[in-house]
Image 1 (cartoon, rainbow, N blue to C red):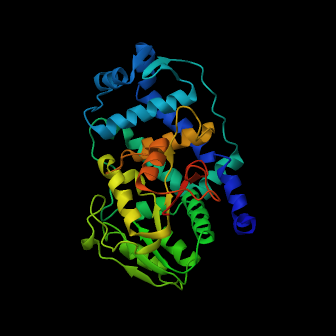
Image 2 (cartoon, rainbow, N blue to C red):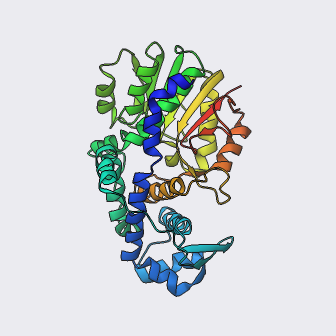
Image 3 (cartoon, rainbow, N blue to C red):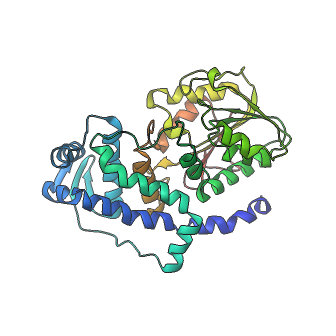
Length: 364
């Protein structure tokens, strides 16, 4: 197993410098200052989450009647707590604080690395945060999975971090079973994950499905030069999350699901995973890429920069249509067990690896 992953070690080491997280910690704090949010918290001093939202509505004109916008504000509070700007004295009771952890400044060399290796990811987060004030005041969503936005999503989904995590997940899935069999790419998007599947499983029967064909031309172009053959399922046969997948029971050995979980409506989430369980063969595996939302007890995610990065990502992508956010880790674990998934203890603990960046669920 060490041999399989040796080529990714340098990439992981680069990710663990947390250069993007450090860059955007400063960016999000600057956003909060410019929006007057620190002044609001200073004036409130001690407050509940609701009082914080009400104050931003009154003083900054934020539209807190919308669940997505309210969620962004609570995510911002969690980010402030991680940075030391607020202390949570008891559940949902906050106090403004100046126990701030200074954010390190990146060197010139580190800044150049961010530009070269993380440029697309940084551009996406930057535009989202720049627009967040407009969105919080009632503006339209900045991005959606619609025609004309293919290039934006293609650059985000192809970023360095996502590419490394996908590669590790697929290598793990390859070790976990045969390189043959039937594989489904659920929500293939612009095809970055699909192209990686074709590389790792060239002899498998690969099926690709998404709720829209908008990204399909890019995805088809991306896998055109691979050795694998892909069966494309027309988007008209599946209406998206909440609609039953158009496959027979026990149809697949593996399901690959990358970056789609935060776009599942809360009330449909368990049903979506039940349906994935249905189409997996006994012994089949679901591999998923999606951060878990940092837990307050820090049992699952301990590193402060990883936690800050997830808060930043969640807040930033909150301006995108259909975003429901990263999910509570224990809720995901409990949901998986209730459905009937089991862990593959050789590869993961509590179903996840790499600070919840990727998940493995096995059907017994």
